[in-house]
Image (cartoon, rainbow, N blue to C red; front, side, top):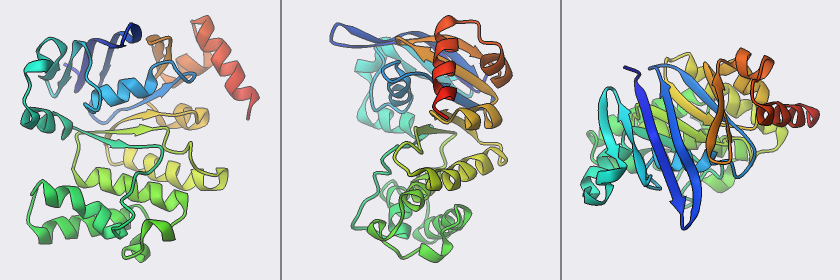
Length: 252
């Protein structure tokens, strides 16, 4: 069985179907890139995986265990929901750092509130993660003193501090100037070398081609195409995929 299994995931907002019977699987250590036009359901899929939205139907399994069943979702307690969320980490496109906390404070806050370890161990791990993303010298800086790329790297360290089994990124470079995009993508690429399981919603086609193990193209709330980067980028089978890729590479 795959490390992550998503089966029959559906999500409606009112009468609008946003996710239509999503099935996907991911092995431990693999990187999944999710591409597609705006409104295709990419962000909603990530939000459902992170339990910021709740799928109406379908199941999510991690490590062979069903952690979410849409049919039973209304019976879940808040404690059960929190436990589900800890399987996943999410890095938002808009950083979402707390302005009143330093870099170190942002990274230690959630593990401290959740009492995941001793304060000393939490701080030691946070310092190591901040160094890992190349910001050892900005440990005591505040978000307003950082560039957008630096803020996004702090957000990555903050997500890693909760030790998620699956790390998700929602367009992590879309709010950045082009010259700052590379530094964030290098950090994500480095995480792949650490055998981390990741899901990346991205408009960076070259990044998806070079880093992902699996690529899915979403359109109209469905997975229109899924395969290796070579299959999806070089031999797309779906006309919508071909049109999207033509448009994307014309913009480069």
